[in-house]
Amino acid sequence: MPVSTTARRGAAACCAVVALCAAPAGTALAEPQPEPEPTPADQPAATPAPEGALHNITYRARIDGLARRATISYRFSDTEVQSADPSMLPGRVFEAQAVLSHPSKAGMRVAIDLPYSANLHCEIEVDDEVVAQADTFVAPRLTRPKDDPDYGALLCGAPVTDTAATVPVDPTVSSPAAPADAASPTGTTE
Image 1 (cartoon, rainbow, N blue to C red):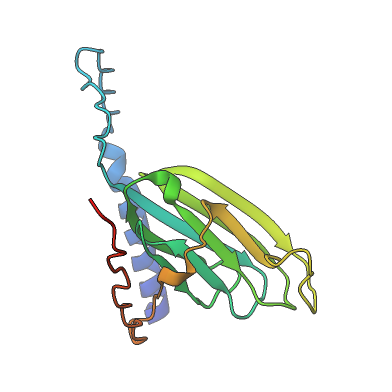
Image 2: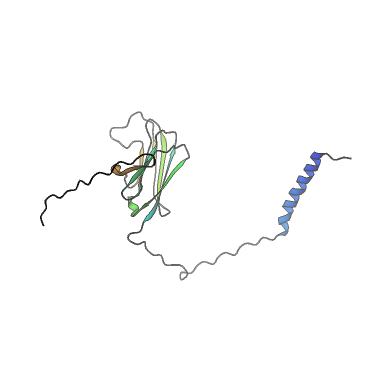
């Protein structure tokens, strides 16, 4: 009696599955030996960071909700603040890296435009340890409250108030010309 092509393919697939399942059965699996716990003499002594050490800073921001014109400002260096205008869809995370001489200077501001509402989340990591984290809900409003100019914004870490040194993230935007040195001798006597 002739066997159909479909039956042959089914039998071949069944044999392949049985062969794959049976092959590892003959191999014994061994649990790896746990590594011995290091003794205090084996551990290197923790050395404190030198006075002028630089710190790796990671900024993360998330906006859960539909909001247009999200703005994220963060301390990029000891003297500069960068600003980004990412498309923040729900679940998307903004992440930026920076290097600062002192971790207490790390700061970020996450803001959305009114009249939208969303949950704002931000966190700052210094040398892979979370040092600041904040969450807030921004309710929908048509106008900003007079007594709260930061309505619709979330501050995380140190204040980001250095607006004179704000550097846009977009490299196509030209940076403003450096101001001329206005310092002049005032006629002091020695």
